[in-house]
Image (tube, rainbow, N blue to C red; front, side, top):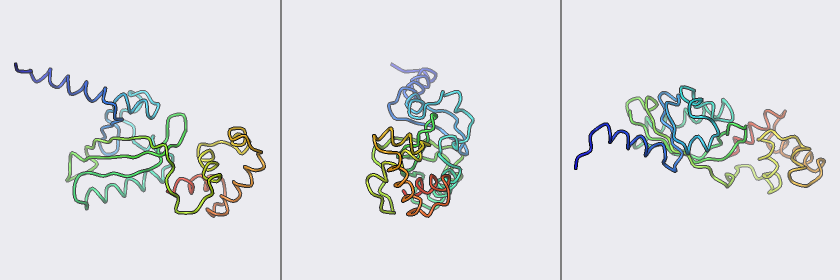
Length: 190
């Protein structure tokens, strides 16, 4: 029994869409397509993502740039067309989460021209290069997600003054001058 080409393409498309692995296809860092698992992971409608820069999925412009530079350098100078790392990503609702990303370039001579990406959400936090206490790590995850000291306190069942003390220690340890810088530095301690 032979399967005609159109039927085979339909099966390939269906397999991509229902795969349990969150996958996205990009062209020059623009999202060309993604599957249902990817939509569930990031919270966007598929149609909303198509044509947008992958910047939409990063917590900051700085993350987008540094990961782009690192991955392009690896793809151009490394052993092959495959790149993998762990990084912070951002859900549509603003939640920042830790994820493992794997990318494969289909155009080695111009790595970003056409790539396939696979993501998986990681439940663990990265090991920080700066030593944070368990409570500081816990509070930092909430700060990155935009919660105020009072909101963090309610979520953790502790005094907002306690959260303020830990936040002040985080500011000092990370040498942050303001809230925006604190969030950026928390993201970069990975």
